[in-house]
Amino acid sequence: GSMVAIGLATAFICAAMGLAWSDEKSQPWYTWAGMNCGEPGAYLHCPQPDVANDASCKDSCERCTHCVATVVSYAAPGQPKCLFRGCDTKCAYYDRDRDGGMVEPLPDAFPSQHLTLHSRVLTPHFCRQFAYDHHGVAGSVTTHKPYLTWTGMDCNEANAQTLQCAEPAEATPERCQIACDDCSYCVAVVMVQSVGGKAKCEFRGCDTSCGCYSTGSGQCAQDLPPTDAIASKGHALFSKMLDPHFCRDFAFTHGGVAGHVVSKAIPKTSFWAVEFQGPSEHSLLKRSQHVRWSTAVLACMAVAAISTMASVLFWARAAHRQSAVHRNLIATDAVEAQEAATGTDGRSAI
Image (cartoon, rainbow, N blue to C red; front, side, top):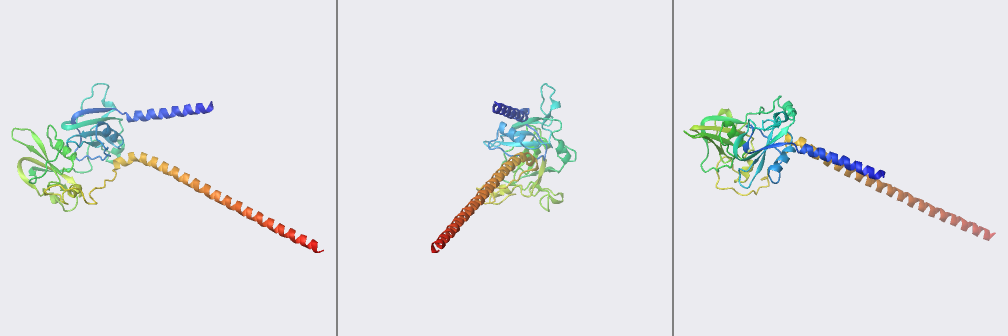
């Protein structure tokens, strides 16, 4: 009876823990088809799921520290991917924003083709630690200048490939920059304002020299425009501030060349073709849960191994002692037998 009671209590505790975990995971989301949201230069690196869709992107966001929203991009046909928004954007709702009625789209959200925005509902202090680490600021980018602006200039190279980026329905400098941030290999974006027409975004890739580098004496040093930039009326060039190796993976598939057009892409054959991407500060904290679990498993294995080794050593010593005792007994018996034999012979002589 007591064993049954213990089993029932254990099952109840496990069920309660499962429900609590489920409640934590089922945090509300609001979904907006055909919408985007972000901040120029806001980067949040979370693990990409094997197959990107609404459910997997939201799951990755929930597991990623400081992730407040995710955007599922279908801009590249047959290659959906998850885009993640962090505490340096205004892309989430807070409990106080809902009021039990209809929820309006976020002020910073904007229409964009081939995208679906999923915004989380957060507790009021969700981004507090992020703000502590960023000069008390959350909701905007303050740590760096993401783009340099060149008004009245265009930039391109003949026969450069057309990037498959999600263009906003209404182009503004900020929206064009956000779209460039979301697009692989985009180094710059040009906002074109045609006479009598709507403005639009045009994107430049790693086969152009339109980006800028933040370190050294490279492109855009001393406030000079990019190499391929030219004067053009009605154009505004926004050059992204790039990491020195931003286009390295592109170069591996284009004959080791970036910055201008080559004949065609070649397959990755170099050992270095797959660029290692280490974990970001945003995802390390969340992954620590898995690290702790792995550490616990390894610790249990170590304890089991030590216990096994101790048991084997104890058995070996016991066997050794038993063998020694057995040999001593045999030796004693032999001595006693010899003494008995000697005594018998003496008596016979008398």
